[in-house]
Length: 288
Image 1 (tube, rainbow, N blue to C red):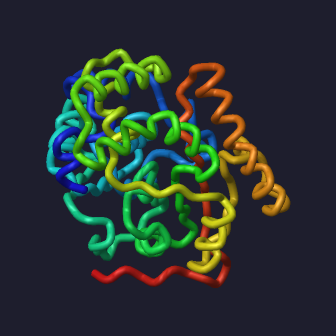
Image 2: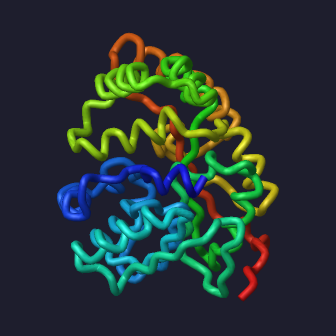
């Protein structure tokens, strides 16, 4: 996994300066994750698990003045993350560490533990959730983003041939260029000539990914002592009956298929969950 991301990390722009401009000019948290936006404030301690080149870490530190530790496997990604932090002038508020999330140990606990688009690239999502939840401090929150089993299916089907050939080591340059072109037609947000291939590389060619449902993740969180308080599945609205959300999420596949096949619009199939420790039930304290 480290080798895959060292070759071309996800969300990797053409330069640190270009990446810093993106962070300065657009608060991606406020635009896309309103429940996370409400949590963040100056001085909040944050652990960003699988930070990559650091868009989430940098956004938390730059726009909210939070104190953030970012961990990742990739030396290439972390080197760029440090360069971007220097461009933004936030080095004093960020700390990047190279480590496998399953092997990360610290005596620190955090007000907020985040992992967006990372755990579904591990071999054990329930184990990964249990591992990172240990670092949520008293009164803290856990925020996770994962590929959705229903919502992801149309995207995977759209690139099925490319993914199968890549898995067998048989993907020709012509077929690679064709798939990248089709991806660019769907994802019109990105003009940076390095950033676009980094998204394609991660979204289409990743050698390992799993997809999940809110129902499944709710069960995992319950077993490790957490309760869901917000999710993108219902557009971050107050949660009443979780069973209603489990039915609602089944419609994700139809919506994703319509977006990709009819609207010709990028829809990766991704959902987020904000959870908090149950009263009287705390995750195991991490070892020093």
